Length: 599
Image (cartoon, rainbow, N blue to C red):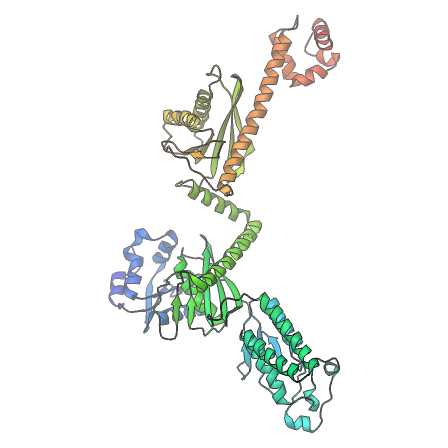
């Protein structure tokens, strides 16, 4: 029963777009959401309780008050939701983990403007470019600009009256050619500002504009027989071309657009952002998000887009996304879901970035927290093998014999996808005579789970049989006799093509050869085979040696058992001294044993 009458609350909520806020009994804001229809969206939390996941049910039980704000359009609700989440950080909203300050390249508002990078965005009339998610790329751009254009780096006040009074002297930067000396009037503002015009075009992504201008100037220099100038311009062109080749060129027809894509798992989501200007990707960033209520990828992307655009102060009017995020468009903003062409290539590029980032970050998490990897692997196994529960406890059976002699069966146990060697077991087959692999499997499975049931131990979630349909059918027969065939998942793995068989299914399941699920199953199968073969060899060696000892005159079955109990193995019996053998045998028996082995 709710702490408040939600039916009465719903009556006052209109069928309009807006933002809703949930408060707990302490009047603390615990969740913020947006909706195209406020009443329908809020009502869905209470009317469809059976369809909610466990986390959302916990949220609903804590709701004690609902507040809402009506807005004109859904996109206004989208922006307002983002602002409220950033301001209040409600407990049950998605947590945006990346909160660092990004650097900008600034062209200072002053006489002979300086060009440098900063992390402080100050509204003083200066022109800011960025922010840059990659500090390395920002420095590459700055270094290229300084190589192409001589600019001042000092912080002197180069007002015309100060230059006219001769207050300053040129520094080392002038002597080495990095500055043209505006402080002493060697360079005028018009010439300086021409360089700034090219710099602004480069920072805006208009590299082709700059290269075309330089080509025109180089042609004029050649026609004027100014070959020294033409050479300098050619060097600038080469540097620009080298920089452009490092950029991702899309198409000159695509300009000023934002591209977003997303990759998510059960706990985290990652959103990639690409900024495209004049056919070139000039910015890229990936945002990490911690899921709180099992939000859909549509909800997560709708939340991330305004956050990222706000951080990067983007004014792009077109946003390319992988799917419809159900936000009403307006005149100055358009969402595009491309199916093919250059915009689709952009979207694919964004996904490659976010998928790689997700893979690397999850590997990092798993190295620091091995239990995260275990949970991920088990969930993937559950999905791949169509199970209802996580396969935390897995058992695998394998048989060994040589032409029906010395038949044994082995079982290995994995817990949380790792070998649990203390739980390994082997069986000497008692009821099977001759080479009957199916009957051997039937006996081993029956004895194993009869004992677990008798001792009230927990059953495994998954049983793997090393073999095809025949061995699987024999194992299933034993499970049915015990009445547990519906309590566990049982599969068989055939060696030829690594196909998996399910009871009653004539078609096998083929897993990707590189999948972690198949690798774990193969590990189980190989470990069962190794464990079974080792036990089989020991049994065969022991029984062969026992038969051999019993053939020695004067040594009977009782004496043989005493020898093996003391020395543990046939090899140690052969290597034992006469004094050691005398602990078990009389002098006549010791002499007979020595003569037998030495002869």
